[in-house]
Amino acid sequence: MTASATAAAPPLAPVSLGTRLGGAGWAFLAPAILLMAVVYIAPLFDSVAISFHPNTPQGIDRSTWILGNYVRLIDDYYLGVLIRTVRISVVIMLVSVLLAYPVALWMAELSPQAQTWAILVYMSPWLVNTVVKSFGWTLLLGNRGVINTALQGLGITDAPIRLMLNEFGIVVGLVPGHFLFVLLPLWAALKGIDGNLRWAAMTLGARPWTVFLRITLPLTLPALLAGAIINFTMNMAAFAAPALLGGTRARVLSFVAYQVNLEELNWPFGGALAVAMLAITLSFVALAQWVGRRLR
Image 1 (cartoon, rainbow, N blue to C red):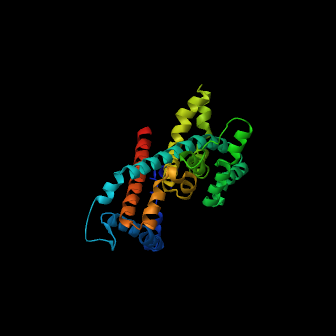
Image 2 (image 1 turned 30 degrees about the vertical axis):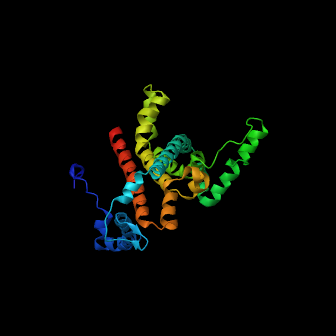
Image 3 (image 1 turned 90 degrees about the horizontal axis):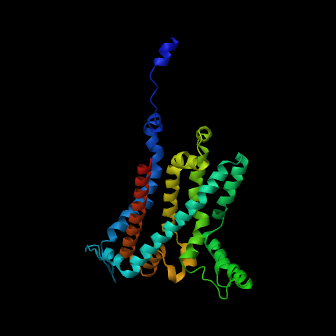
């Protein structure tokens, strides 16, 4: 075969793993699909279904269909909890993004061994139980904690500053752990950028800030949005830290859902709360994907 004939030959189409495995591919996937169907999809659909039924002293009345559980969501208390949960989740996400980007830029310039150690350091909060971490924050943020004691000892304040049992305490408690889920995608994206692109732009006279805005940021935007989505989702579902650091003044949706389901045993309204949380999260995911498409 001549070199020209070889060069003219069409490239081979990529073959998926499922095609190569044939029917065996579904056999490998079947246990995972069955597990998801049993432990996630079926309970999710059941929660949606019972949210349209009333809760009675005798139990859930599945013969009656109502919208009252969803109407109850616009009650001042529950609507305030929904708004507070979204606000806290967005604030944590924005703080994580602002902190993660410079750290990811710094990590991408380290040697491979140093990057490994840096990742281990930033993963360390996940080696400690969430409840233990939250109690640790109370030693720092409490009225008689380390920070307030130091401020009063230095004469900066006369009385303790409320640093916990509010929204600020929840943000402080969740950022160190959830920050990692923005950092890792950004770090991986930055490592994948060809350094010649930035070198060529600077050779042509572009300033560092221009290189960042025109090359680095657009190429890492998908990873940034992916990390922000994961971060927001975890913020919405967080339970232990908001319960311990937010107190009764800053109740979030996950704790209210716990009270409704396990203390009041009002599963239909708990289902409505779960549907509301899922709808808010999916709306944010759709919005982030739309923003990503618009900015490409």
